[in-house]
Image 1 (cartoon, one colour):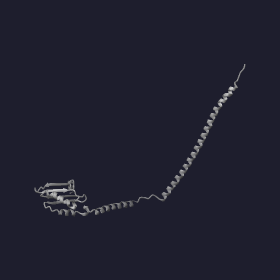
Image 2: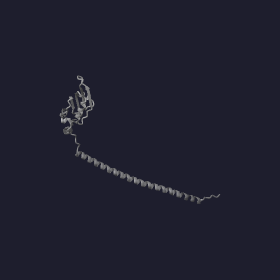
Image 3: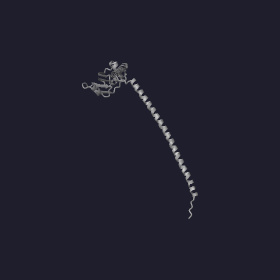
Image 4: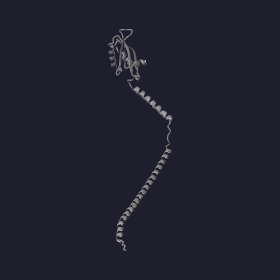
Length: 206
């Protein structure tokens, strides 16, 4: 009995497996080198981060120390209540003085010039058919109400026109004119003329 062994074929198969093994070996070595390089990079980056963190901590500690020194050198000042009250009082006095000066410098204000100018202007009216019975002047509200009578109602508009020509009455706008027949004299007309739009305000004030 004869048995044959093909040694040539086995050697040929072995040579075919060798390039694949070498390729895997090269890939493994390359992976190991890449991982090693990446590890070195991470190590360096971590060290840099630690150094930066340490430096920042040192800067923070120095800043906190500086703040503490400044707090000791310049302690927080307590608010002086008396000084605050004095400032408030001074501001109130200044505001009051400003209002007084404004009033004194106002040449047209009734509060500073008085009411004699109104009486002088009314006294200059020479319409005998019209006479005044009551004059109400409110300097604070800058209002004026005239009450009077006449036997000739046509003279009342003429009287108002002449009043508007007087300097003291310029700028005054009479909002209402009420004329009624006198209760005790049928030939007499009573009138009320006012700068108020609602005469009930004047009645409440009286």
